[in-house]
Length: 168
Image 1: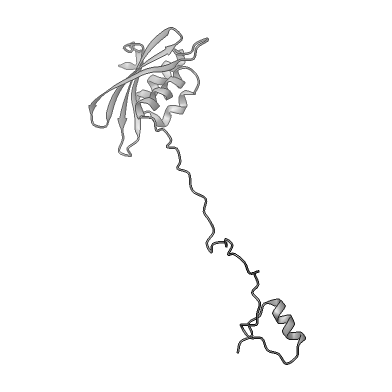
Image 2 (image 1 turned 180 degrees about the vertical axis):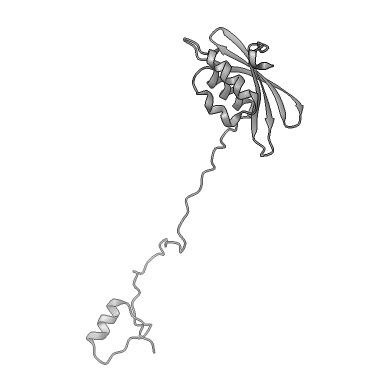
């Protein structure tokens, strides 16, 4: 026979010499009464609230904002190094030197964007930039590389480029 006992029953058996405890003699460790909720074996995991999706800007919107920040002086030109290819960086640096979108008062914002897709993986984009009652035009070209990242390959502001001496 196995000695099954809770501490109180074991103590009582030790006090009375020559008695052996049986399973039916042991008192339960919990008081008798209505069943109570017991803790489950596995820990409870709080209900996970669904995450709000982070709005992903289209490449046209993202680049319009990046270019606007550079041309208005809110970001340095070199922040666009990894986002531009070829002459686009030089053109952007030349434009930013003049600070064409730097304003006193109202900060420039992108008011409208449109684009044309001349071929798959290339977008020609125009944006209307507003600052107070002033409206400017910005155009840029995006091309998707083999790594599927979009890069700016050309940028113009307020009309056609003026000829430069080093354009030969």
